[in-house]
Amino acid sequence: MKLIVFGFGRAGGRLADEFARINKNARGGRGIRVVTDAFVADTDAGDLAELKHIKFDYQHRVLIGARQTSGHGLAGNNALAAGIARDSTDALLDAMRTDRTISEADAFLVLTATGGGTGSGTAAIAISAIRERYETTPIFAMVALPFEDELRGQTRTARNTAVCLKSVYAVADAVILQDNQRYAQREYSLREDWQQLNRLMVAPFYNVLSVGEEKKAKFVGAKNLDAGDLIQILSGWTALGKGTLPLPRFNLLRKAAPQDGRGVMLVDDAINDLSVHCRAADAARAAFLITGPPGQISVSLVKEIGNHLRDITTRAMIRDGDYPRHHGELEVVVIISHLSDVETVREYYQRLTEAD
Image (cartoon, rainbow, N blue to C red; front, side, top):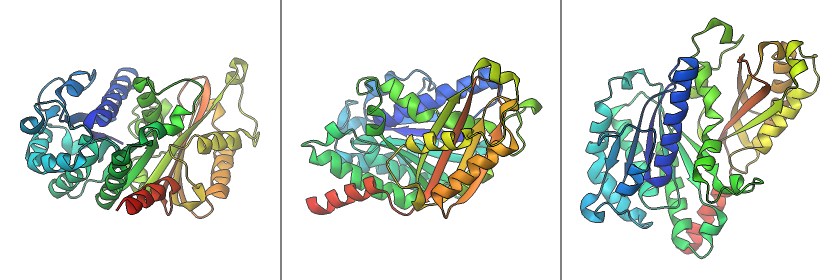
């Protein structure tokens, strides 16, 4: 699956930069492309300058609202950001129009944080503008929710988040939720390590995007999880998680025993790693991709994973695929989508109602 990535605001720009980085890895290491192009729009010139992998020109790093901010950001004012976005949609669309590979993309992915000003105020307006221009191309959003300490005593952050979630959900085909606090609970501190945080958020996408674009026959699995499958699965509130199981070296040389319980462990690990706290049973759609050494991916393992995921999601339509890459671990990425209820989102909506 090939994406056009567009990040808004500081956090969205950093996430777009990370997608640009994994695309470079895919092109250099696998000879495939998973991001046809990556763009960033921000009201802060300094945020644009700090990016490492986005092309360094005004078409890919778009400074908006310069008259209102003098290039110094909005300090959380997402209402002003929305006004700037309405005035800047032509500039954003013109930036993408210069990209000759845009017709190759299977979908757009819009990236933003919800609690700040620029990203939370511009994302939904940008999605609507893109939809108007590219009617048949799916548009997905990935939004990063605030840390708990960003919410303490910060009514604006909670309000921005609720407004952003509501507006983006209304216009995007799917909204992938990334709760910063879920990553902050790891054993190392990520509060100050934004690069590591972004890498954790984007890492599950690497194989999921690569598998459908794989060109080498020895890396093509028995069942592909391609762009068509993902477009059918991704809908509404969405979460994803990754489970891994290291393989001892001597195990790499022998085939896996059928029904050895590894599939259950991998799925449980992925569900515990979901990008936002939610009930998998509330999902109407789901997918999984198993990646690992060819001799370790068996029909029985795929069946075990599928059966266990079906037991957890209970009512979801499930798509699956396998990706026989050579490395020393098994990896399962689980996507649960079309969630009927997400407690975290509901809490933000309640905060907005109480504030009003």
